[in-house]
Length: 222
Image (tube, rainbow, N blue to C red; front, side, top):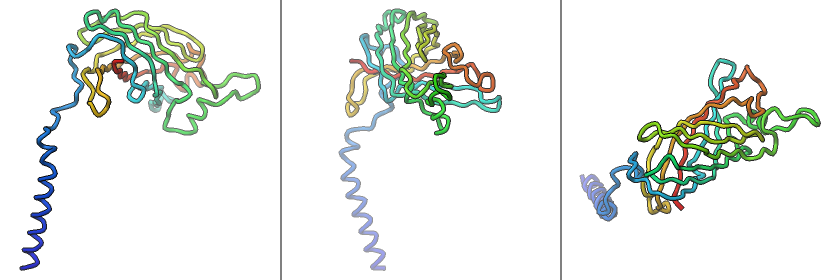
């Protein structure tokens, strides 16, 4: 019985100390949700820089008709100029480091960046030292309050072609102070390209020529 009372007293003391330690945190209050909101009134006019840690391009192809296969491009840099009063005048320019392509297969990643099979030949895909891809917008056509078609020139594998991104406003707002603060804005977009248009037709049609692109773009105001 004495042991039980002693254990209860010890547990009570620990709980009391924990409550005292937590009190300052509770007094500060807990956030009611993420700082970003799907609210266009939070968009601030100005020039933004792409957040390379949270901007991604996912590409997906059909593999042998059995399953889809996807990979990623990350570490993307660039800029966005936007004024919420005239969104059709927005301009975006990004650079995508193709050499940092990521897949779930080490063998496939190696193949994408492998050199020519024969001296003087062309690599099957990007090759060992591919130039970065770029996308530079040329026009923005608003389709709905939070959607727009963004037309631009995509340069990939040394070839430039027009591409239309179907973009959607995702959220905006001030960033957390512990993460540097600043005004933030984000979008998601989709597009489709034919890889053979960019000199990347190896394996067609066993692996689809059509490539679905899914983009997550995050920007922080300068």
